[in-house]
Image (cartoon, rainbow, N blue to C red; front, side, top):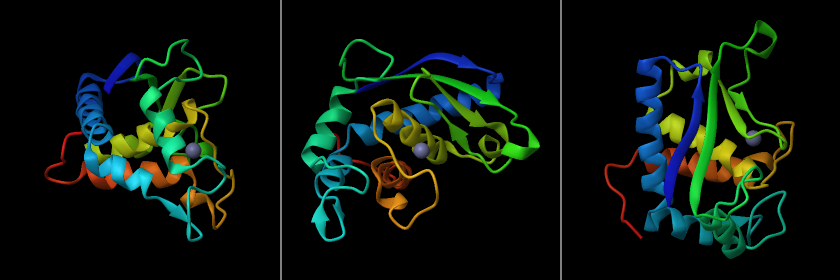
Length: 169
Ligand SMILES: [Zn+2]
């Protein structure tokens, strides 16, 4: 799978360099044996699968590999992302980032981005990209939310991105 940034809005040259390193990490994780095995072996409440989703791990993995975002026409097997970096106002200061179902863009709060390393970026954009594939989670911080596809796999991407080496598929 390739990772392709379409538009990157609001990034300085240095912020863009960090973004590009994060995207390299994201691609390495998505193309790794470790990621595939962890997705296929994922369980929630003792059963194969994820919270807030009735699909099997194999179905979830197939959706990821197809990589058909809600704003693109083709299942091209490529991560297509438009990203925007914004200094969110004080009342959104706890928000790391967001996207909406109708949007083709992922917005990241500069307040968090400035403290991110490339593994955090891979995990964060992985989480938001999974929303673009149609995966959802509870809005509130419920007990099951960490086991949803975006949270569980965003965390997995971040942790695998921090490994010194991964096995290519
Ligand atoms: Zn989310």
